[in-house]
Image (spheres, rainbow, N blue to C red):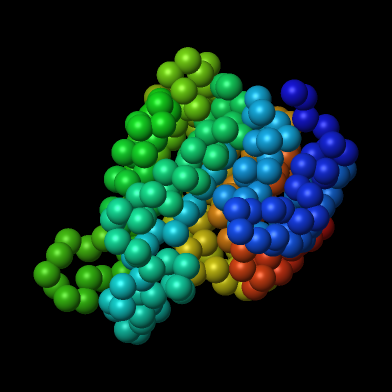
Length: 283
């Protein structure tokens, strides 16, 4: 089923009926001219509704930055000072069994809303990324690459009992083994100086210029997501982020000439996202 902006605005009903209640879903941002939409609500319920409206899928790519489940009361170093690791209640682990069940649930819905040749990127640390990879395999996705994002300036390990954590992993997977995924090989080769681009990428965390609207505790750099988008989509393609946060994916998509749909539950991050959209469109 072909995507048209006017039809997609009707994809999410004003109220979504879940198993035991009716939960309002807020259309927080809509720009049909640019093909940009942000919904406030639970990503499981919204993706389930989208999958019913578009049984053959409607997204060319998904970038998912799910909770890493690393908020365990630990400490780290931030700006030269001791700081808590905890990001919020949404980032606390419920144990490996429940973490896996939730991960498989949202990944299965992502798979349903992808077009047949669509791909998904998922970022994570050791706390969640191995669960993600296992769930992908069980669902029949085809894992294409595991990208290592190396951070040049990681915070030191305060306990001095472990190696300093300096990387995150991005898993890139196709919807199924039969998918004919997009890979803009020549563009990536040119960016790598005429050589095949390797799977270790070095990017600095977001600077002050990317936080003028406020801060998100797990915000990704625009340059990182921009590369993922340019590598695996074409201009005009439609991208979903089910854990939109501050909508770095959305800003990157609009700058790159793609369309975007984001889902975010927390009001403060929805407001942050809207500010970033408006800021990006002014440039």
